[in-house]
Length: 233
View 1 (tube, rainbow, N blue to C red):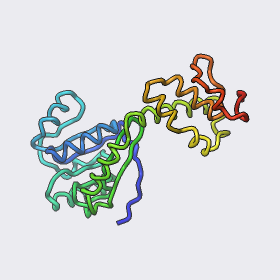
View 2 (cartoon, helix red, strand yellow; view 1 turned 120 degrees about the horizontal axis):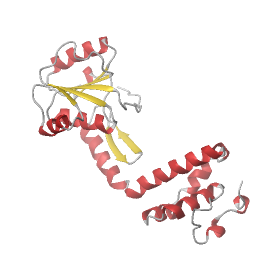
View 3 (tube, rainbow, N blue to C red; view 1 turned 90 degrees about the vertical axis):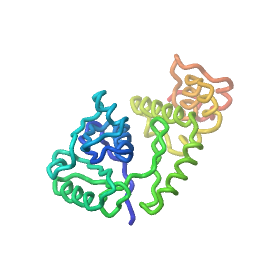
View 4 (spheres, rainbow, N blue to C red; view 1 turned 135 degrees about the horizontal axis):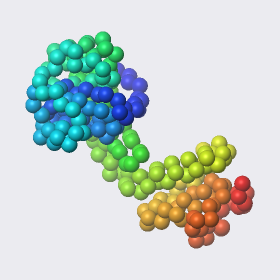
């Protein structure tokens, strides 16, 4: 099946998880990472889920799933190994306008969950279309090792500078090729050394944007800056 990859905004959205075991824990963990409002329906709970209930992070309905439980939810995740129950939950949830994911049961899914790598604002999703979860996990582990902490800092710096340039009204004047050329080993090295101010000043200079007075000027910055971008715009 050819899936269309999307990222869904779930902050404060009501989401239901049917099942309170290890698989249910995984589903809830992902939903909480997206800041969703989570309710778990299950007679019993994994200890970690019980702890989150006690902390007020999730709601718990302590019984088996009933036909009206999907009412009011936008996302329903089924964490059981009973395919007939999965089919029931999917049919009833779809009738109420909710999207359904059933663990390891693509036939009863409206969407599947990819393997995910997170580094601060960076989120990378890996999917094999449900055909090989082991392969998706292998790719995730290799990417997890590749994306070191400086990638997180780089993403945060780029987001900060982009927002600043947008406020100044000059963001659209900077070509994408200029952004790509500005992201190099030296910039990442400064971030790895936790020299945020110098990294930001270097990035702004390479983009042709004026450096703010409070930002330290990196050594030899004037030499690196192209002549066409040497004056503030």
